[in-house]
Length: 208
Image (cartoon, rainbow, N blue to C red; front, side, top):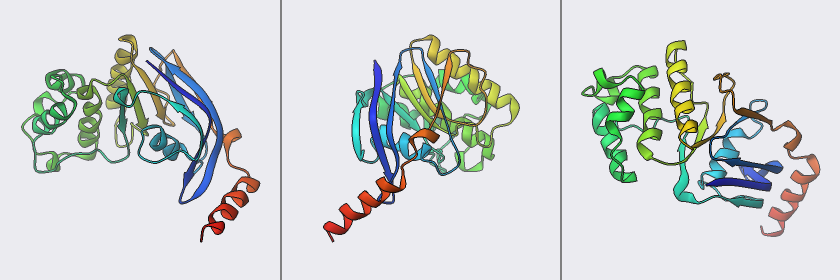
C-alpha cells in the first residue's frame, strides 16, 4: 500500500493552482499539508481522492485504499448516530461500527438523531466514518474543525492507532496533532506561476 504523487498539477475553477507536487506516503506514515488559505490544499486532496481529474503528472494509488473526509461530515440528519455508521459500514462492507463508536466517544449518543447533534458531535461522527471504512489511506481536510481540545486529543489518538496498524494519513490541518512520525509538506513552492495560468487560459481559449 503506497500513495505516489509525481509532478502533479491540480486545478480549481479551470485554473491551475498547484504544479509539480511530488511525494510518497507509505504504511505507517502521516503527511501534513501546509500553506496559506486558498493555496490548493483542498483541491489537492479532492484530486487524490478521485473527485476531480488531475491536470498533469502522475498519481498512483489503488482507489480501494482511500477514505476521504472533507469539510462536510456526510451525515444523514434523520438517521441516528448508529444508523449513520451502519449505513457506511454497509457501503464499505465492514463490521466496525462498535469500534468506531467507542473510539470517537459516541457510544452514549448512538440513538440520537444526527441532525440533533452539536457541531463538535457531528464532526466526531463524520470522522468515525473513516474507521468504519476499513480503508488504509485516510485523506483528511481540516479534520479538527469544530472539535474542542479533548476531542482533538481523542482524534489524534485514533490517527495514531491507525498508523500503528499499518495505515497512512494525508491531512490538511493547522493543528499540531502531536504525531511523532508526521512530516510536513509546505505547498508554497508548488503554487502555480503566472506563466502557468496564462498557458491554461490560452489552452482554454483555443477550444472556445
